[in-house]
Length: 106
Image 1 (cartoon, rainbow, N blue to C red):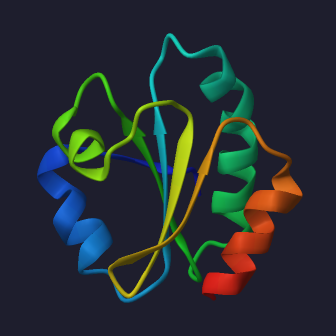
Image 2: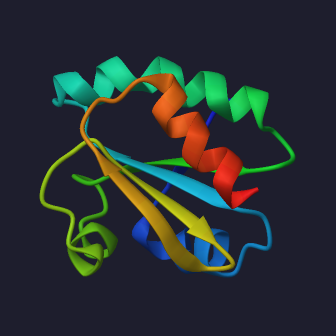
Protein backbone atom coordinates (compact mmCIF):
# COMPACT_ATOMS: atom_id res chain seq x y z
CA UNK A 1 0.00 0.00 0.00
CA UNK A 2 1.31 3.43 -0.92
CA UNK A 3 1.71 6.30 1.49
CA UNK A 4 -1.60 8.16 1.83
CA UNK A 5 -2.00 11.90 1.30
CA UNK A 6 -2.82 13.90 4.41
CA UNK A 7 -4.20 17.45 4.81
CA UNK A 8 -4.69 20.06 7.52
CA UNK A 9 -8.30 18.91 7.98
CA UNK A 10 -7.57 15.23 8.70
CA UNK A 11 -4.20 15.56 10.47
CA UNK A 12 -5.53 15.44 14.03
CA UNK A 13 -7.78 12.42 13.40
CA UNK A 14 -5.27 10.40 11.38
CA UNK A 15 -2.08 11.29 13.29
CA UNK A 16 -2.70 12.53 16.81
CA UNK A 17 -5.56 10.11 17.52
CA UNK A 18 -3.93 7.07 15.86
CA UNK A 19 -2.98 4.12 18.08
CA UNK A 20 -0.29 2.89 15.64
CA UNK A 21 2.98 4.81 15.22
CA UNK A 22 2.80 7.38 12.39
CA UNK A 23 5.37 8.80 9.97
CA UNK A 24 4.47 12.01 8.10
CA UNK A 25 6.53 13.10 5.09
CA UNK A 26 6.11 16.87 4.62
CA UNK A 27 6.84 17.66 0.96
CA UNK A 28 5.95 19.79 -2.08
CA UNK A 29 5.76 18.89 -5.80
CA UNK A 30 8.43 21.45 -6.80
CA UNK A 31 10.96 20.10 -4.26
CA UNK A 32 13.67 17.95 -5.89
CA UNK A 33 14.88 16.36 -2.63
CA UNK A 34 11.24 15.53 -1.80
CA UNK A 35 10.94 13.64 -5.09
CA UNK A 36 14.23 11.87 -4.33
CA UNK A 37 12.96 10.56 -0.99
CA UNK A 38 9.49 9.61 -2.26
CA UNK A 39 10.42 6.07 -3.45
CA UNK A 40 11.93 5.34 -0.02
CA UNK A 41 8.75 6.52 1.71
CA UNK A 42 6.60 4.39 -0.60
CA UNK A 43 8.79 1.33 -0.05
CA UNK A 44 8.64 1.72 3.74
CA UNK A 45 4.85 2.25 3.60
CA UNK A 46 4.54 -1.16 1.94
CA UNK A 47 7.06 -2.87 4.22
CA UNK A 48 5.45 -1.63 7.45
CA UNK A 49 1.80 -1.80 6.35
CA UNK A 50 -0.37 -2.68 9.35
CA UNK A 51 2.39 -1.74 11.81
CA UNK A 52 3.02 1.94 11.03
CA UNK A 53 0.85 4.51 9.24
CA UNK A 54 2.86 6.48 6.68
CA UNK A 55 1.44 9.68 5.21
CA UNK A 56 2.62 12.31 2.73
CA UNK A 57 1.65 15.90 3.50
CA UNK A 58 1.77 18.52 0.72
CA UNK A 59 2.85 21.74 2.48
CA UNK A 60 1.65 23.93 -0.42
CA UNK A 61 -1.91 22.59 -0.30
CA UNK A 62 -2.16 22.53 3.50
CA UNK A 63 0.11 25.11 5.19
CA UNK A 64 -1.50 25.26 8.66
CA UNK A 65 -0.07 22.09 10.27
CA UNK A 66 3.47 22.57 8.89
CA UNK A 67 3.38 26.12 10.30
CA UNK A 68 2.16 24.85 13.66
CA UNK A 69 4.97 22.27 13.74
CA UNK A 70 7.57 24.89 12.81
CA UNK A 71 8.64 23.21 9.57
CA UNK A 72 11.07 25.50 7.72
CA UNK A 73 12.61 23.07 5.21
CA UNK A 74 11.39 20.09 3.22
CA UNK A 75 11.47 17.20 3.02
CA UNK A 76 10.90 16.83 6.73
CA UNK A 77 9.78 13.58 8.31
CA UNK A 78 7.93 13.60 11.61
CA UNK A 79 7.62 10.39 13.61
CA UNK A 80 4.70 10.20 16.04
CA UNK A 81 4.14 7.68 18.81
CA UNK A 82 0.91 7.80 20.83
CA UNK A 83 0.05 11.17 19.28
CA UNK A 84 3.31 12.86 20.33
CA UNK A 85 6.33 13.83 18.23
CA UNK A 86 9.02 11.20 18.81
CA UNK A 87 11.62 12.27 16.23
CA UNK A 88 12.11 14.60 13.28
CA UNK A 89 14.44 14.28 10.28
CA UNK A 90 14.98 17.05 7.73
CA UNK A 91 16.53 16.53 4.32
CA UNK A 92 17.31 13.49 2.23
CA UNK A 93 18.71 10.68 4.35
CA UNK A 94 19.39 6.99 3.63
CA UNK A 95 16.53 4.52 3.96
CA UNK A 96 18.38 2.89 6.86
CA UNK A 97 18.22 6.13 8.87
CA UNK A 98 14.44 6.37 8.45
CA UNK A 99 13.96 2.68 9.12
CA UNK A 100 16.03 2.92 12.31
CA UNK A 101 13.59 5.48 13.74
CA UNK A 102 10.58 3.41 12.59
CA UNK A 103 11.97 0.42 14.50
CA UNK A 104 12.37 2.61 17.61
CA UNK A 105 8.71 3.69 17.55
CA UNK A 106 7.35 0.18 17.03
